[in-house]
Image (cartoon, rainbow, N blue to C red):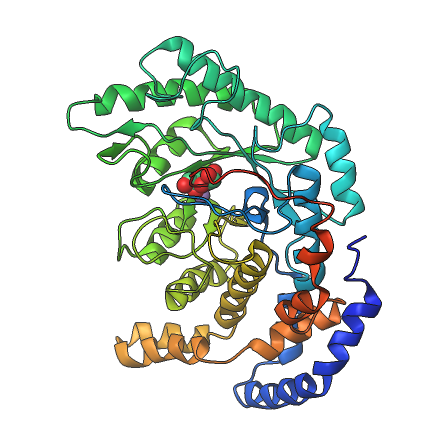
Length: 430
Ligand code: PSV
Ligand code: MN
């Protein structure tokens, strides 16, 4: 099924690390016990946690300037699924794939669903794409899609989103994620209010086509490709639109889509409070929408986001059902390795947030003990939970050290004859 990474190969790799893991796990177990935490309950929670892989993430991305193809890159959706299955096989926390249309389009999507099932995968939210022109397309998205001034353009974009719902039904998905690149590059280019009115009109039509048990996720982005304004620029506009559309519409948080230093965990808390949190596109960034591996720049921010999520989970916040997805692009790393890194980093933040002593935190908040409240969070964040993550994987038959195991398998070299290089150094952000 996942070729080289069968039970025998992963088992042999795990035997190299087993004694050290048992040692570290027992030591951490004793440490947590002193704080009244049962390590096995945390390990069980880690085993259940999952985050979806974006189908585009297994390809090598590019910048606005260049794209440098990687070895044995997947050339179609079936090969993308094979790579996603390797990530899930080794990390045991990525059983879902979030597809992108038309990039993943084939005539018979039921074959794609069957192939995914055979690999132990299923489908998360469907992503539509009205930010690029496709070969043979009637109208260009150069000046917008769902908000375009020309009704014919808007109708084309609406029809594509409705097609995506149909694709998702074939694949067994239950939500549509809509990110638009619409915006403006110059002050005065676009009438802010009219553009948003057109957006809402278009989204009402898409919303009306949603099956009863589907949700629609609105993804905001502060800039890029438009550099002066974007129509859905922040969580405020996104949540206002979600409220306007109805109960099936939610606001999706991509960690790279905010102004620097914005308090994202607080946005998350607000969206939870008003029952409008769709979920996440996890990634990390230093400057903008950098699409770096999750937790590589701001691990404490990621932990603080999970602190809000675990708080909501534990107090049974109403209608709390966030979709966790990665969204990142790789220019200098092997995408499989980067996605494994990110999935494990997100899982780490979740587990660290489970260690927060919430009763103590509540007490410190009530007493206005700022230092101890902050230290309560820091204490959880600074706990090295790596043995819990590794044990969770080992218990599920995954790899104790997924990156080392993947490298030992020499996956890319083995696949190179079957997957010749994709020609071209064309630029293109994904
Ligand atoms: C836009 O930057 C974005 O984050 C959206 O989620 C897209 O679907 C994705 O990137 C891939 O282009
Ligand atoms: Mn995104």
